[in-house]
Image (cartoon, rainbow over all chains, first blue to last red; front, side, top):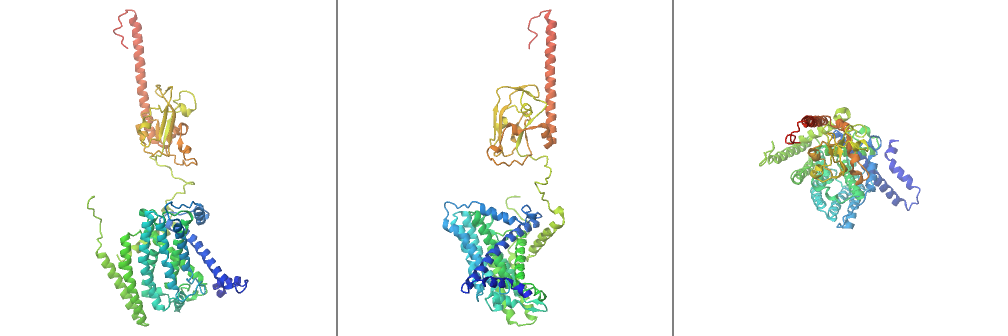
Length: 391
Length: 215
């Protein structure tokens, strides 16, 4: 029974495809899976937007949207209708074609990333050997669409926002990749399916998730920081810093194109959390061995939603960084630590089983973290603010 | 240092999140159209014209007859965004002091232009224009619907007392003082004329020259 439930989507697809002539089956099967992904994640997007608006409200001691439907749960539908019926304005001096293509390219590129994510046992759309590589290759092309949007709008705020976004995304792409490489080093494969399989083992009922190792924990934290910056999420949401740039690279977008950007941003968050889940949190594997009967896709989507909630929580807590702080943080703190983490992962591999590697690897990371934080703090002068001219 | 500030902040927001479900006093939001808080006395948004029901002169409805405004046009001239338009009447009406005064044949305020500065109120010598607290002014006609004419602007003194009790009491006291002063003056004047008339009748017999009885 639990086996059937676990594989219910796979079996459903087999059953549906079975009605067709055999020559059509492979193509229709893929189209079906794609259709499910294309419908499911926008639905999750609606849910997350609602969660975010309600959650941020509660964090600020407000109620949040509560007018549309009971407890405001139909708010995403109202938002959707609003953005669909709004006028689509293209500036006269804008490059129309590129202006139109930018949101499309963004959403398409982000959707491509979902192709390789294992969303459950046997539930990977494209099972390739180098799926991690594919993911990062596709993920890097979102920068292109951001710059297309900023450049084609012919608006200085858009362009400044796009330049910031590209600088930020390229800077954080490096630590994002490097922190994932540690996982590749340990598991010895670029295939996300095999990475999940490697974590789907249990000792005394506890899973072998990579987050429960010193290098995995550090890698996960660094990955989370880089992921937040990569998806332009608060506290790294400078590209759309409304206090200084109106709305950043999508200043000149309205109506459905704006909705597409919004959708693309959230889809990127889903996909990057999905990848983080796969790499560090055991993907679709259960957190305890006795919970193995729960369908695998529930674990995957559960972990995804939990990470979305953490995203929202952090957004409700931290203020936005300054541009120089952002860049310094990327190149002087996160990147060296990810490099060290690679070394740590190598040590972990070569020290072999036993308690020694736990002590050594943890000690190295803690020491490096404290030393770098201290060194970084030394140049800063904390204390009460002093004014040169005003008193 | 070392990122514990971030953890402290996360704990704080988590406390807010959980607390807002438990304690009602954390949520300061008032569910506006259904429930509302009483406006503060110093609230102001757009001007209105005060009328007194008891000081009516001339025909027409109460609001028109009792308007305090005498169309002196000081507010029109002082208004920084120039949102007031006044047309003076041809004839005159008696005001509360019994003096013949002009009245506004037309008094329009474009509240889409008004910036709620209250300068019109401060310059008005007749306590005729005051600030309102009515804020639900949305309309589907953004030009005509936001141009208030005399009828829409006229509100009774009782209404003024209701929205700004302290201020209205002061204004009433001031007006009453002025009224008693002018009454006393009028009385003195009438007494003087009466006395003079009596004197004139008394003096009529001796028939002294007109040197004494200067008007």
